[in-house]
Length: 451
Image 1 (cartoon, rainbow, N blue to C red):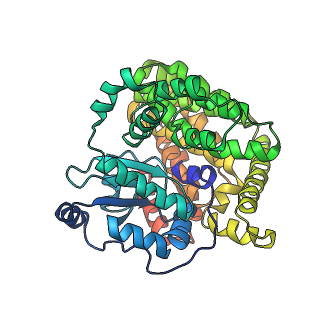
Image 2: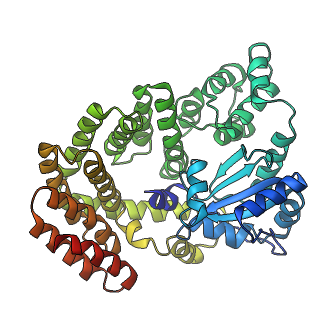
């Protein structure tokens, strides 16, 4: 899921930049980095990436080697890179709630608390600006409790309110109430670029008036829809987290609203997906299983051929969206496909079948939960076998991914006392992975359970 989000939701940055020494990333262990940062009393700049992530590669290629970036970051930060899916990076990514790649964390060396959190690719100036803002936050003598205390008396001051919103966001605090107040007090008579820029950079959920203000500015040309589609989905996970924190599932309705605003044909499915996640996170298993069944029924009611048509349309839209971004960056049209191919490298198969892949991944996650939490419910297991059948049919265009999905499907079949079907499924998975012996060996070990 994170892999698809990385490819689909973060805009590519493709500027030509000057190269020099660039950022000097530390080569030691995480603890050695922490010790050095404490000794020098410098913020830690932590880049959490994944090897398959296109925007991460673009940061490595265009931003981190830049001379201006290197001069600034080497002076002010202890910099370190971690693969969020390998080694000690897994635990650190989990600790800091990393939801997508790349995630940049600016950490206080004293207690490793988050001073600032940023995601996605940006150009050189914006990346340096991120660092400058993190330093400002680090040197700010006022704590968040000080800001909260002053809010009652100083929220009518534009500069204070902007500082409050920025600091709250950097510390992962919900500041929707402050954005609402900011809109009501300081919206200019005519749209102002600085005002819009501040909002777009500091809005973290869908549940504030700032989202409505920005969405209402668009006349809904295809180009503008593409721009909204880059921005709005990035707010979905935070909207879910806020709904969970406030125990208010109605806040998720804004996800349905936003998906429809970007004309996403999967709007209802996306909404259902987040409703299911809400009940899982709140441990409301009664409503969770109802939500799962509702979600699965919607998936199964759509013909496979329609999924393939949606795949084609979504891939074409993705290419067009990238084209808009590249054009805005001044990249010649003749170079578009080389940049797009680089961004989609190793994930083009999923990108060409986005709808099918994501739907299969959602079903696979539901099966995982059935195995973990519902394996004693015979009625649920029977339904899950049907979900598994559909998932494997939906995922036929894939190779290694199909094999991964097959592992859960086989276990569901076995729990339904159909060991022969489980074995046949895993045997097919072995054939699917013949070009990758490492994965094939893992699948073969799984197959032994059903011999």
